[in-house]
Length: 394
Image (cartoon, rainbow, N blue to C red; front, side, top):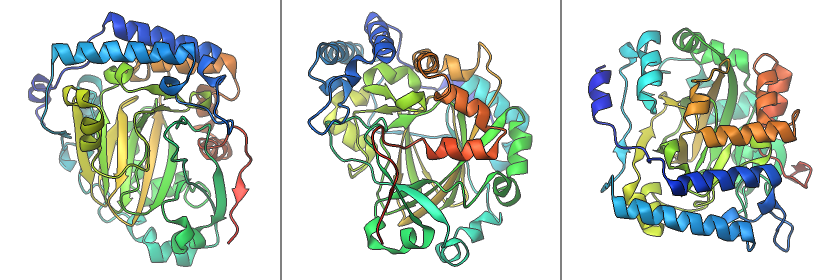
């Protein structure tokens, strides 16, 4: 793999400007004092920052408008379509090449067919999940489709059922299980998913495994990002991913979730149908001046997603199964966790100072070496601020 040639052809990042600086300062002040959380709708749900009828909401609107105007005027980048994610040959997927990719290129990359022949490919077929693991309790999510409320996790309710009912009953179409930690665990990753090979290539850090199972073709996530390195294993079904470099964060209505576990963009919602790039360019014409990357994952593919890269994920198959392995390394001043998005990392630090034992930085640190802590942390990622988990009647 010729990394030098790849580096010469990369599209531009968003240049630092007065408008992006103002947005960052406002974002951190709001994170510290929670101004935008104080104004809620009639149902008591958190409003989007930019739609909040308050002084802080108007400030976000004005700064965003000026930043967009500057982007449109400069036209440093213009595209007629998304950029294809680079593919790394499986023979090049070694520790030395992968380390250089992360350090120098710092972009998503896909390795086709990495899981071919791995036992997990057979175990996670739908009929095997039902026959072997059908009685296991799972926690599933159906996100709100209210475009005025924030998609930062504060308005989400989770529901419990068993895996058999989840996979077979129509009522669970368009629901998804974001953690079946009790079904597959850390040792399953190593034994069934070529986890030992990945560990030899990654070497540094500890993995926190988050398993996903989703029903419904064309179901999608909201545009979001997180702080860890994510080596995603696409086990069953096809998934379409779009990516945006974290330097463009000031342009996409970013907000941190409760306790800073992840960040989400309020520009999109998971219920929107269609290709992400087309949707964004039609709704927000300035997106033609933002480099958007795209890849469609096939069963058995491996995808590397660096810290804080924004991504939208759409299922293209009726059932998809995947495993996100989030690698946590000792924090260093040049860590991509910090340098890829200093403002989002600073937001996490604020959450740590406000809620030390509930913050993502604290819980991730405890989870990487403790299976029980890992399960509790993952199961808390999507939880309502006001409601307890509910048992769906079946």
